[in-house]
Length: 279
Image (cartoon, rainbow, N blue to C red; front, top):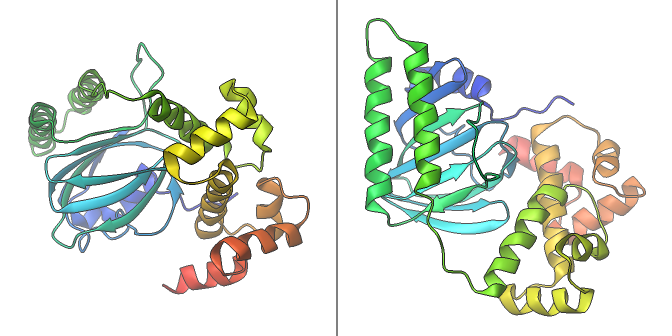
């Protein structure tokens, strides 16, 4: 499957002339704007990361979906995203300025990592900027020491996870977090509702009530939303035939998938792909 992923190799090819620096498994994009780095800030296009990113928002505003959850970021906020994270930028202001660490290797963590956002934490933001300055200084030396950059980036990743905010979530929020995280990982294949209730150890009725109360959407609506996201990823970032996309997503026949996609988006998969390519 030839997917045009936004991984560090492709970022290097697209952004080398726009301030992107790269050593080994690590890359750095410094104070970039949407106009300078449009490939990095694609809007309304879902994709799965093959690399991790730590985004530092210096200026402007961004609305972004990370693993099916929507966040509004402002200057001073951080977004930590890991490989396989499902991402979509809904909007980024023209005056936005973002620095990003890109990494293809994760250091060992005591707990299973998850993508998260740090909002309004001046300490975390200042620490991230300190690392940014140190790594930038290393890149600007006459001789670049890859080992130093690697260790600084590893330290940054570990430091950001140590500063992860401990949100005070209600039981409903906690359940929605678990459900949406599971959905972002497993929703790339068409599963029945029972699949999710079994994995979350709740009854179908309890789950239905909880999800509707917390989000305003039904469980089935969320499952359909995840499938549409995944279909758009495959249609936009690969040359897979529609029949292959339908099979990958677990639909019995291509016609079932086409009807489903048209009902959800108002477009057939081929029309979406053509519209997306010409945009």
